[in-house]
Image (cartoon, rainbow, N blue to C red; front, side, top):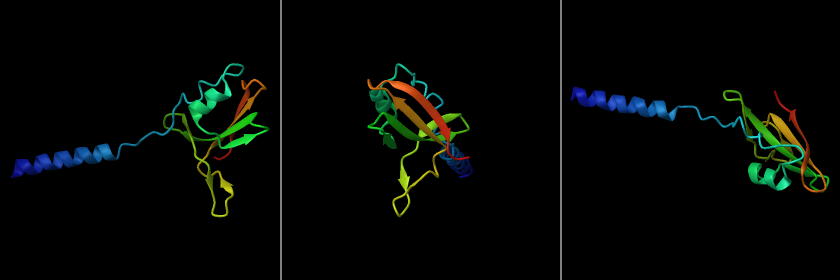
Length: 116
């Protein structure tokens, strides 16, 4: 009976340890593919998904990004809204702004801090 209890306790502690292991959201290399003069709008949308904002006939795309300090990684934050429909930025730490030319090639990118 005593060995059965020790085995059960060992298994339980192992499972608790696995269940509480922190999951890192961010990817340190998420934005590494962005190269001004090379990356296309299609590549951006394929890699990052649908943007949170589109401006100037889609010449400018924006993405809301979170940041995981434990691995210095970025992750996409889905667009959220308050009850009255206004967008909020509570989960986002950065706004990624991408500007494309007439041939849908990335011309400029900027990572703007929006929350501390």
